[in-house]
Length: 449
Ligand SMILES: Cc1ncc(COP(=O)(O)O)c(C=O)c1O
Image 1 (spheres, helix red, strand yellow):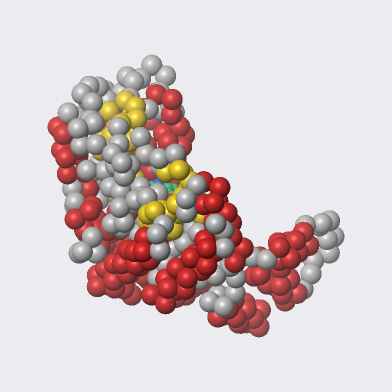
Image 2: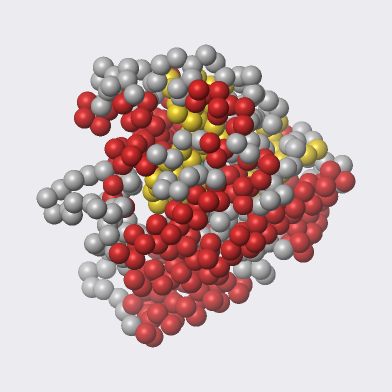
């Protein structure tokens, strides 16, 4: 076993060492070779050393180098070394974070992390929380608690009686709310087609005067960080008004809510601490490995009501049992990497990580604007959108950059225009990487007039 695991470490280190010098996207040859993964399943097994060698030979060159310093696609954090190391240890532990009995360690890590996270985001002590796969499931989990609460206030027990005959719930989402938010709405039987979309400004944030009259069970979903522009819905104006009218306010803060951790950016996220629930990703800006997301719910009883289970073989919970707060029962111990990163960075280190990404986004935006290209959003966080003229040319530049391999950026559409979308969320990116990326984008843009 030791030989095999040491081999895995050596291969992983070789892979990580090569990230800076390789093409960010895989070559056509590397992708073609993936066909070797398939084929008839062998009747007899293979030597594990050979299996690992094959996985490395085929897999490593075919990866997207998103763990490296110049991947700016989607919103994809890298993995801090301490997070990866903790992940390896957690893999060896193979704990089931289901309960305090199946893993006392898992339960303790979750408690410690919840307290740190609620402090970062301004939630009260004793907050309810769940460690899930990402923001999509974190939104789902929080909205299940919201659904419970707004119906319980009307005397309806949604966990027992379902939604058949229940008082209708109004769900309010900004016109630029993330698709994952709508998917969560759909999965909970609240009906994507019944969602009321609220008017947004030119950055995609809900207008402060867009709140309709709230009447009956209502869930208002705000967004801290638009996936294209990075814009924040005006929480300080919307949350008190919605809550006074009896609504539950949920925040999809997948990446943007981390602004609260950086004093110079915290103003952008002001007011969100009053929300009833929050969804946030670990695998984006906190730079822990996939998969990792967290739900926080101000009043834990609502989350517990939505998620708890009972079975003859379970203890009568005198302490917080993780299975009472999460959609899954058995699951990996996701709090491990979050704990390691928060412990390692401390407040100052986390502030620096967030601030550096924001500063680098501004650096790149200034470079692009200085070269005469149209930056389409106000760059106040970590997101940059740029057009290179007409849509065809912008598409050619995106494709050209991906083929060039120095850096990887994806595309989007913003106000009817094609744009390159550049997201800064990796600890691995240095200012020299920003300069190298700018030079590559300009080189490709100039050769695609
Ligand atoms: C605002 C927002 N919400 C939700 C998501 C979905 O997150 P995940 O892919 O972690 O489920 C994203 C992903 O970029 C996002 O930006």
